[in-house]
Length: 311
Ligand SMILES: C[S@@+](CC[C@H](N)C(=O)[O-])C[C@H]1O[C@@H](n2cnc3c(N)ncnc32)[C@H](O)[C@@H]1O
Image (cartoon, rainbow, N blue to C red; front, side):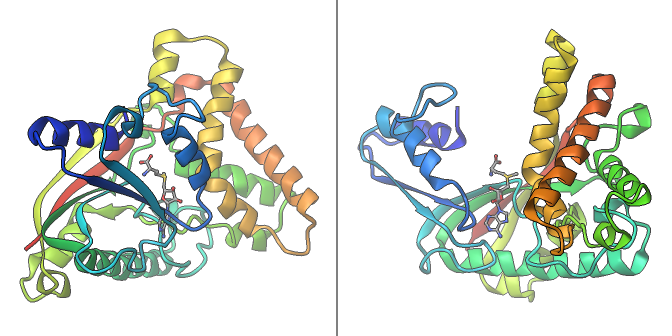
């Protein structure tokens, strides 16, 4: 059941007079809002065949194709906001990482410092924009990728023999550079401009009552960190099956959020066909690795749940 459907069901159980509910989806301008509306209106199948538009009266839906680094709604428009697994994306690339695709597995202290500095600025910007949009008394829940005290950030406990996804993708891409399939420069220019903030980093803007975020009216009600197991790995362990098919699905999931970064890293002197061929063989190599040892590849997610209130 989708999150919106669960919330609407609860609101309808609590209030007898069915007050109007307006749901607005917010994502980047390039997001596929068309499929979303087709699903909600029953023109494409939903996984559980339930759309709140069909199930409940007096519910309205819209979309906002504006980045969360900008203000997305008029002042005090939002009563309840929810965001999941999105705000780790940074507003821009602070600098290239010389030795890795992800900041967590880079050993360049200076570059890591620039990533964490921009992540702190971005987090404050995101919160200040939300502070304007939230109505007084309004609340929001933000679910962010995070790291725990030991530095673990999900993707499978590599200490127990699992493959560290961030390390693995960086190494596979580095092998491409060493074999001459991409240039060294292309390797350096390929970065995932996202940052996994620690819990302290996420709490920081709320600690001091004179901070810009507190002055804008936001307080942190609670913060909780939880692990979400990898659905692909759970299915593989339970049902087994064709390892190649499993690998295709697992790598497709990784491809969906990383393809753009790998594509951007490739030189503009290359043709689109050339870029596509390189990326096909990169993801095929990844797929071969997963198919050879499916139990080692896991996309467990470590998430921090922040409950925030506007006073
Ligand atoms: C991993 S998906 C999460 C999707 C969904 N919230 C979920 O939990 O299944 C990350 C989403 O964040 C969106 N995103 C990334 N940067 C964004 C930005 N600056 N503003 C708004 N959305 C952004 C992406 O387009 C993508 O839809």
